[in-house]
Length: 304
Image (cartoon, rainbow, N blue to C red):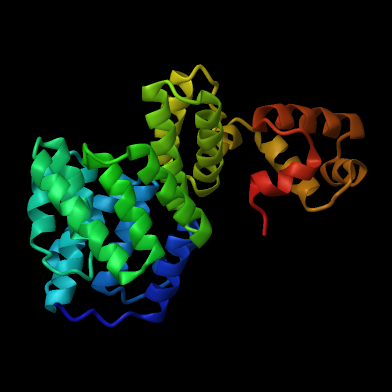
């Protein structure tokens, strides 16, 4: 078994945040590290992929391939690069990289299995996913078990996929692993869409994942949720970043002032416009942001 690399405080804090699904906060912590380790770079790559920032992810992949160190560092770099290769659709490369990891401390079997299933290696994928689930259960890690259950549901033909995903979702929710919970909820909704089961539950699961993906700006997850909602005949919500882009500079300024407690009269006096004009701008901004009123501005604008 490989020795684990020494974890810096920033890495540990970021890993906790990422497991909790707070991708943006985790990324802020990681980027504050002026001398990032291989572990920090690998975790940053995971955040970039979650947000769909492929150009930045590719740069990190290049850095990781250039960093040689301990066996543990090499294993982390290989696993991160396997995840990148899979995201780029290079599943054969992803399998090759994952298989070089060779330590039970890292979930390389999950990554290998998910790419193997896409290149037709079903038997190998089934074996590795089953092994990873057994290892996770033996270790007693709720997070690892939930991840492994999600993987077996994706690649193992003989398991009860609905039951596996429901167990994974319950564990992820109980542990406060919001990103994992949103991913599993989307998987479960997709399964229900395919099997024509309870579509009401599927829509509810997707709306939950949609809200989370929007808050964290996770474009890959948001895109998958949107496609499933459309398949079920539902209208996806406009992502917050797209809605914000529709605001004029005046509307954005007025919304920020309103969200921080300024009255319409105070806003009008500050900008040299009438109260009616302030009301008009706010009304149009609410429609663009798909909110009901001033009390929702603070959340939408993500003010501290």
